[in-house]
Image (tube, rainbow over all chains, first blue to last red; front, side):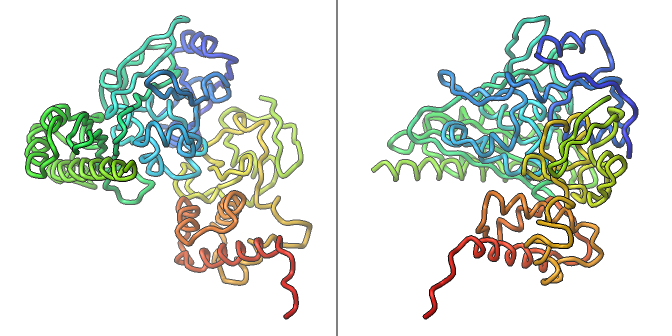
Length: 295
Length: 164
């Protein structure tokens, strides 16, 4: 369980990091290392060089910018979990973070690292896809934006080009007064990988009618899958359980979940339907309660 | 590579291979063998140390990444040689250990909890040690130990009750 030898660089800024990556095909970025280091220990990953961006101060921040909350790529998961701005503006992100690994890995693990790792079961990726986050990466001295829906292209595979480095992710803020979120996950232990997960965010108007709905499932497919047809079916209505079930069931009818030792494909599909419905239900109820507090 | 590690308040100048984990560096270069090598890939928690008072896995960090941080190992938490910290005392009293392999990590995880939360609920205690595997105790006495230590540490900062 010892990693193979490698070189180590700690660039002073992001452009230097990209230059080192460009010069060495076998180089990989390390930030928190909470996935990469075990992969290296098991020799499933054998980078020739680690480019440590964990101390580039400009990459670690949480700030509001217009209708988004922007989180720097190397911001520790623990910092985001405890952040009041995130809790108030992107409550779905706060809600899922306790399910990301466990406290000691969240103390080191980063938001950008989890996104760039693109594990199909990753909760942070699920939130990015659910909310339609925008990811920003640096390459050749310039910044490029990419939608979360285009960023994830396969299990552990992203659209990031070679010698580029994720720098930040912008989570949209829903400014409606009555917003609620829901999240559910089935796993062997809370700190372990999800077999299936689902997240939802709903905005209700004063009458309790859905004005905006976002719902997605994770872990069941190669990357988190946003169920836009479900949102389309529910917006403009008061959520009726039968209508929600019909829309979710139809949206998930054609997914092709992985089958493994832990759960069969059929189990994952059935559980995905159930968890998506529970997430929607929780989100609607939370949004309804927000109305109750106002009056 | 040359690095400087600040461990238990002392700065050590070291020359390490980049692939040396913080765990191996603590054990092999500094002879601080209280951090235990269990799974060596981040699952068991036996290698837990504190980095700036926060519990982390020393097997999931390379020593070269750790320079400049304040690292605390189990060897650094007793107030003086021959003494035990309140948490160590409580683990002894409640039989919070059997084989002892997980114990330094359990105590450091508990220390990290109590630093930020002097009056944790049972659920918060469970959450704080949920990243650490114990194969002997069944956890009940460990939870008891942490609750007892928390109570004593809170009490030690309170003025004595006036006599009735």
